[in-house]
Image (cartoon, rainbow over all chains, first blue to last red; front, side, top):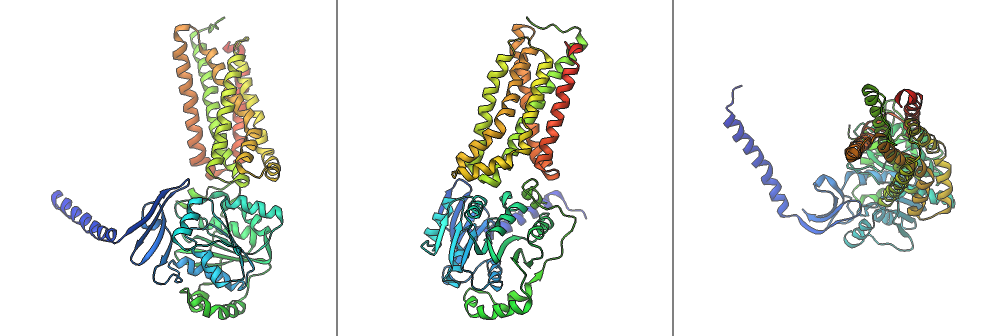
Length: 300
Length: 209
C-alpha cells in the first residue's frame, strides 16, 4: 500500500467533512430550551426530532431522559421500558421509593401505572427537580413527594425511622459518574432493611464494563440470586423471600399487559429477557464501603 | 542556638531524613483527606458540602499544627522529636480505622443536617492527626536552618518536599491504592510506614545529631 501523504491528508479531510456535515444538520433542528450549570453538573434541556430531552454534559450520549412530544406516554429509552419489568415481581406496590429523578420518566410512569401508590423520589440536585417540573411534567403532591438529598443519607434516615417500601428503584447512575457509596454491600443492606417482606428492588446498571462482575457479586452477597434483563443496560430485579417463578411472572405480565402497552412495552418483549443472573466471575471482589472504586472499574 | 552538623556526609543524611519526614507527612495528610471523603460518604453523602467540611477541617487542623510546630521548635529542637511528632500523628490516626463508624453512626442519629454532621465527624476523627502532621513542617524548618540568610531557601525546599509529598499521596491513593486495598488497609499501612520512619529518626538521633 503506497498512498501519498497528500492523498492521505485529503481523504482524512473528506472523512472529517463527511462526519461533520450530518452533525451540523442535526444541530440545526436542535432547539435548546434551557441550559444551566448546577452544583453537580451541566444541565441542558433541548428539543430535536420531536423529542424533548434532558442531558447532563455535552454529547447526545449524555441524555438522561427524553419524552416524545406527540406521545408523552411512550417510553423513549430502552432501559426505562425494561425497568417496567419490576412490576412483574409485584404488580401492586403500595409504597415506592425512587432514587434518582432525571427527567422524572420513571416516577411519572409509575404514578400512571399504579395510581394508588405513595411514591417518594430522592434527587440530590435541586436544579434537576426544577427542570423535571418545568419541562417534563413532573408534579408533586400528596402521592408524590420529592426529597432533595443524597440517596444514601435518605435511605439511612428511613431505616432509622422504620419506614418500609414495597418497591425501591435505583436509578442514580450514568455512564459518566457513579455515586460510589450507593454501589456497596452496606448500601444494598440498608436498602434491604427498608423493604417489606416481599419487597422488590429494581436497579438500572451497566451491561458491559469492568464493573459487571463486581456489581453482580455485590448484589448476590446481599440478596442472593437475582433476575437480570440485559441489553445496552442491565436491569437487576430482586425480590425478598423468593424470586417469582416463570408462571408467576407470566400471570403478572398478563394482568399488566393492557396498561403497559400504552408505554411502549409488552410481555412478549420483556418476558424472554428474564434470566437468573449467573454469568459473572465468582472471584470478583464484592464492593463495600471499604472498597468501592466503582468509577475506576467502570472505565475499564 | 543553631545546630551544626558533625560532618558533611552525616549532615547530608540528616537533611535527607528531615526532608523524608516532611515529604511523608505531606503524603499522609493528603491521603487521609481523600479517604476522609470515603469514610464520611455512607453517613453524610458526597455532596459539595461534605467536601467543604472535610477541606475546612483539614485546613484548620494544619493551621493549628503550624502554630504548634513553630512553638515546639523554640525549645531544644531535635530530630528525634521530629520523628516523635510523626509517630504521634500516626498513632492518633488509629481511630480513623477503628472509631469512625461508631462515632459517625452516633452523629448521624443526633445531627440531622449532613453539613454539620460531616463537619463534626471529620473534626473528631481527623483534626488531631492532621494537626500533628502540620506541626512537622515548621519544626523541620527549624532543624534545617543553619544560617539566617539561607532560611528562606531552606523553608522553600521544605515546602517543595512536603507539598510534593502531598501531591504524591493524592495521586497514588486515588488512582491506584483504592483499586487494590480497603480504606482501612491503606490507613493502617500508612500508620505503619509513619512509625517506621519516626522510629528510624529517633534511633539515629545520636548519629545524626
